[in-house]
Image (tube, rainbow, N blue to C red):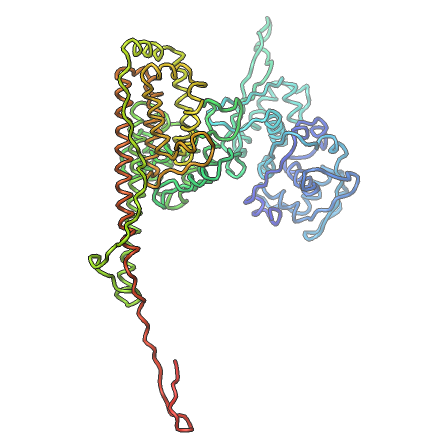
Length: 631
């Protein structure tokens, strides 16, 4: 499809995979020394046509056939329509082909160079953008671009939000050879006539990375006007990939991915789970505990980070109250964000917002400070309110539709509720939040020892790790928080957090009691505590309540210890339990009330729909008998 014409070629923008051994091959660099930048784009296109589906090339000695229109599509990607005579010249420079004329609808043959068998071997791959190659005007730009892609592939460099640039050091001789220039070229000419315009072209056309050159000079000797140039350091800053389908994503359990798809927001502002997962993987934080030293799939905490940023920006736009001054100027903030949602759709706006934020962080620092906690809470509450308002509006629309059908005689008339008797009430479920008596207050000496333990730097480090331990449960509260609480209670509290476990025991186990309550609310029972069966929270536990349980009952202890807020710690944990227990019991009472209403509705007799009138006519036949004639 990409080779049907220049417009299709530019629209598809094919990026062909090439092994690092090929991109960095000296034989490839020395081959076709007279080829231009457009010739190199044509070469990569012809090589792609000759490759097998697995990327290998078989039978190098056999000639290959390609269409003239296909080759002209690659040559015309620079914006000017190439003619068959230009293709003839390109084939002569690449393969030494005779300058025989070609017809637009014809074909031509070519042979691949023999060294390809040694360099096209499986390994680490980089992707060459063929449109970018065709748009370069200088051969040096195409060669340096190919070298940089090869170096990034060899180093397995991938975009990481906030990551350090990849550095490549080259001597002036190595730089000249890389750009296809004589090794003895003067340094001033190399810089002014080749390196500067080459970097300008790469900045204009390459969308995968930015390159900044820094000169490293040696010691100036007597009699020299300038210090000698020892090497050039090319700092390559990787940019977020434009195609999210190429972003590696952490494998999520089926129920977690379903949870992403059900993130509660109004339909017009709801981001798809696939986009949320891929954007979270694309902008994964390198500093998170447990993240790999290099690039890798997204860790769990990135999902909530991206969602919080989006909800804060969306609430900022809907309320008109800016979180930072940049809200007045950025393309995906304020009223411009709402306009982008209307024109581009919510998923593309979500991607554009995070690209802009990753390029120059503004909202993230504002959310990381103390005042940002209130911004996050308000944004999440606004999301829940939008979803509830939409649910109410849909319910009202459904009621209006029923009334309209009843008025038109298409639905049965309602039956007064007072005439309905429910003989068998619905069975009441067991309490979702069983309360337990509090333990007696611990001995003052034990409290003093516990406070001394919690004040140590080692305990604060454990508290930080404990906060990240619960992060996955905070992001997927209905599916993962109960499972994490079950594993935590069985063994991991004592094994992974020995200082916190010891201090909690001295205080009378207030934190353990909080985790026990959290686990019970989210489906852990005595029967499944010691196994790994899937947990199902009580139906009265919705997303907001489960999230609050994971945050308040799971992470509040870690926040208090890490921040040194130890005064009244036991009482605060008890208050947290009482508050979440009260919310759970309120949710249970509301759920029971809904069940009673549903039971009454189910027991209410439903009359048969009215029989529509039958229109017919009666006429007398030739025998004098009257017969019915239906419409």
